[in-house]
Image (cartoon, rainbow, N blue to C red; front, side, top):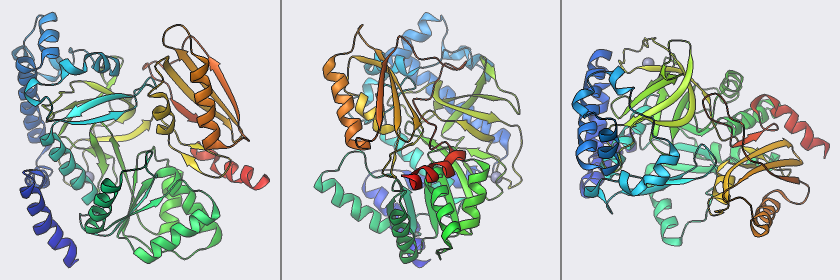
Length: 464
Ligand SMILES: [Zn+2]
């Protein structure tokens, strides 16, 4: 308690001041604004949106041209209905116009990141340092609703890094985690030994909060219930990075004896929405993000599912205006009984990357495949379908008419390294990949790890 008090009130603000960042100030602002009534939050949000539009028009070449081609200026955008007339900023547009989307004033000063695209091809994007402060503050506030305050002990039941870090970066990370009292446990090892090790670590570290992927948390919980293993009870569990099904929530709560808080975020924006202690939906990070749920080109009504389209209000370094994340949300007009004015979405119902299981009982994140395809220029789109534990189909759409033997061999080698030789790999070259009405498809899809068939997965492993 004392440590987290000192961390939150002295060490963290001091650290931010020394680094010339304002995260601690934004956090204080967000803690206050969450209790404002909805109309006030929305009117502040609208002012922030207008500032962003004006800035983008005046300073960012891509938007100047876009507004000119539409023969409008930001002054003409006076209400949400006007704003909805602006075109969607797709990942393809970002890929083709990246340098024109970066504000010249921020060039070379932004943080550069990469993410997977909705068509299975990763792309790079940038955000300003100030935007980093805002998004970090929004994440800190959202996690605090689950009691996961900075400086209290957290266990991250998380995926191992996709690429090994350098020695200096690793030392820095270890130090950082030590001061933040975070412990990372590999959640992709679904063997009995993996679970036993995980429980041992949780019992030793005694976290206040456990943060993890929904599916591995569920698998661990099943293991705890099946074996009757004694596990330290945290105060809360935060489900992140994956869709959380009601059955999973119920099982996790029963096994770990603590409430589950669902959250939704993305690499492009960090925390987009999170549940508070009332669990009546996910509160949007509305001071940092302007979030629309769009169905057939119009806002989805309560009870309707639509595409999540986001405008990042503080990323002046590379403005994202009306960007579809690639996920679907269930819209609601409900106001949470907690008293926070922040608007809600009822649930996030679609994600484009599913975890894939290996015959060795490990899980691979969808990013394993997007990372692999990133450097293969003769592949335009791809889709991975795990039909069974021993059968993997990868559909490939050629970039320039054909795919080289070298590329196919490279894919085969990498899949074999990760899955071993017991997996039959079927590489199919196709002209296109069928999409949903919203223009999306699951980039990685597993019929093995699909939440409800998890027990079948365990059975299959036992049979071997
Ligand atoms: Zn609430």
